[in-house]
Amino acid sequence: MIAKNRLRGLEQIGALTVSEGLIKEAQAAAARQTSEYAPGERAALISQIKSLLQKQNAVLVAHYYTSPDLQQLAEETGGHVADSLEMARFGNEHPATTLVVAGVRFMGETAKILNPEKRVLMPDNQATCSLDLECPVDVFSEFCDAHPDHTVVVYANTSADVKARADWVVTSGIALPIVKHLAKQKKKIIWAPDKHLGSYVQNITGVDMLIWPGSCVVHEKFKAKGIEGLKDQYPHAAVLVHPESPAEVIEIADVVGSTTALIQACRNLTAKEFIVATEPGIFYKMKQAAPDKIFLEAPTGGVSATCESCMRCPWMGMNGLRNLARTLETGKDEIVVEEAVRKKALIPLQRMMDFAREHNIGMKVKGNA
Ligand code: 13P
Ligand code: SF4
Image 1 (tube, rainbow, N blue to C red):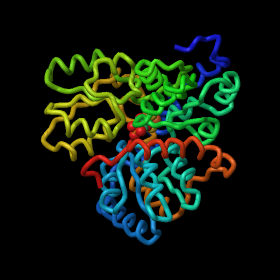
Image 2: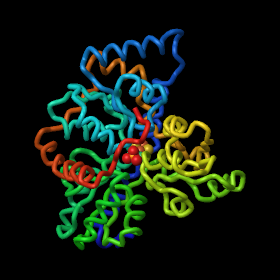
Image 3: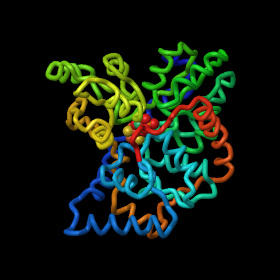
């Protein structure tokens, strides 16, 4: 836990929780993407997108949380479906001159930071992430300035500006090895913005860490009690948990890991049933990885008035066939990162990419397109 007197500006930070209004806005935008297709519309959009990708020398990189339609399109067009680390690696190595990133804004920005010469498009560049929103650069930067003896480690789910203030960027797939590496050097760390992932990493590494109080609106809602209730019905089910979940949920997990690690677990574990505490978009790939197994959504706090975002990431939902076709046609949702910021943000990001390569971390899920 953070000692309050050491976290200058904590009062302000406490007020930064993402409002229900913002979540509702994202849900409304997501609903516009999924509202019923007119007869023939879906097939027409898919064929239009395929042809535009080809004409524009563009490749589609989709996160596991996007809709099955987008994941399938990425697979069918020589693109890729992946976690945030692998999305960055794939975009960086692919020869296409346009990267179309279906995911949330930090993923598009990461692609642009690593590939300034490429055009980066998103279906909707306003698709953000609660972790990014809860870590505004001015407050964060002031906090870092107050602790100059700390190494600044930020999660990839942050803005380009926040990355530009960091020494290291990490994703959930590489956070542990990087922090272990820093622990060996006896570094003290500022960790931002996900408090649950931060505590998880701190518990394992024992590193001296100041943890920013951000959280993911989706994972934060999973409850140990609900999962245990489901376990009573499926006693042989393995519990798979993304480390953005609260500690009580992590404690009862059979596997804790990045989206890729959770998909790999479905294939590798002998269990036939899985209770999955992460965004259910991942079921598309889990079913591909283990078609004969059963996947159950881990219960959240309940679909009540106080749980606006239960389970589904409202911002991932903003990616659809309609706005994917539109961005390819108009280039409207291009990602732009100011060059001075990009150059600074590239340093910690490249550090992560180099570390991943040197330690062979973030390889593709076997059988992935
Ligand atoms: P991964 O890096 O595991 O894909 O996670 C990204 C994310 O946003 C999880 O909520
Ligand atoms: Fe951000 Fe959570 Fe959505 Fe991932 S699932 S993009 S952490 S809000």
